[in-house]
Length: 452
Ligand SMILES: Cc1cc2nc3c(=O)[nH]c(=O)nc-3n(C[C@H](O)[C@H](O)[C@H](O)COP(=O)(O)OP(=O)(O)OC[C@H]3O[C@@H](n4cnc5c(N)ncnc54)[C@H](O)[C@@H]3O)c2cc1C
Image (tube, rainbow, N blue to C red; front, side, top):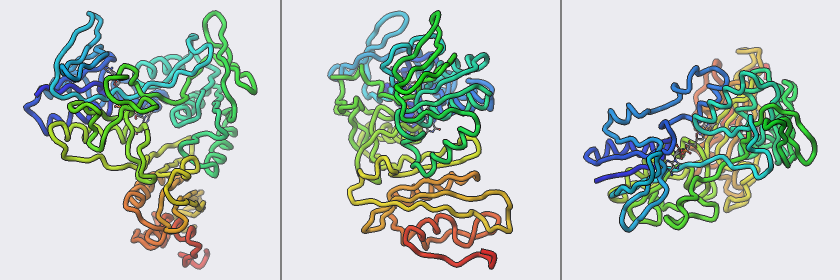
């Protein structure tokens, strides 16, 4: 059986690894339009900040490792067409166009940065940020850049803004919405982060719409918004992504946003064509709907499921909570499930509770060990639908507990009493997640020492 995988990033990589285990006799071909394979965009910030020393360190597979596994790798090979009846794909390379046949096809074309519809995006020193080539360009630019504007305050914009600010660049971040990280955290958290950023000299310009990028002699000099002008010798546009599916129009079913429609087995509208990753939607447990959550963690799970079902349907795609964690200067934070932005999409009425709590008893540490938490739950049933955590301590792993709680359909009552360990070095007699649920229920709890 000849299986072609299109796209070598997280979804394509996991699909290939699964095929190697499940169908070792198959003839696996990996097509990638870029010049390298399997680059970890998630590691770009570490490269920009000089934590990882080389872009080569950020590949989780390369041509040699795939070839050693018996996979035929075709780089600089863009798949431009599919004939599902004849079971062939058309491939464009520097040598021209050719057709090749397949028995099964797995599409993982992923996403591309949203092209901001304003004048000036083609000026020198204006960058997007995804994949190895852009990472390379931005890092090179950082050697001489002095004044940067980052357009878009989602997590990618925030990551590059942090790298610029740490480098000592005069940095401004602009977003049309009224807070940074709007799809990540609620305002109780972002107000603190924004204050911290301003104290560090970063200019945070929310509720501003970029109208134009201006240049002189072909290079960027200024960003114009509906409210002001910001000088810049470097601009990074991180204003969202779009599925890389324009070429698939009319070949497989796409939804209104251009996402590839897949069933629970990751099968497309065509019998022998599967799809996975950022170009598809994923079941979102809190709302029981299918949404696009562009995360490597999701793409990897989908890649496995697509490959498992290649011969016959054996594994359904499980729902996710969109769980994600990040650091910004001294703060660590994480999110799972619904938040202010999408809580209204739950089937039942949802409410929330914000709590601040000390992680350990005061006698253990003098430094600030507060954890800020927010929980979303159904008003009537108390079923938990979302959570956010933030602290100067690394509490991010606890969000995985909350992801499980949501997936399992637990209530506040269940979380309030569930068995979490106590050891003063790590926590208080009631773990902060117990406390979060108790406070949402309006309950109090016994103190850990007489000093409290
Ligand atoms: C800066 C940054 C940081 C991130 N950090 C995190 C993180 O910390 N955690 C996390 O979970 N996620 C993170 N993400 C998101 C994560 O990188 C994506 O969700 C993930 O890469 C999606 O994988 P994918 O396989 O669907 O597609 P993509 O990574 O988009 O890759 C698609 C691949 O297919 C190739 N391709 C596309 N079309 C064709 C074609 N027609 N023919 C041949 N090849 C084609 C492309 O060249 C590309 O290599 C980050 C993203 C960025 C940009």
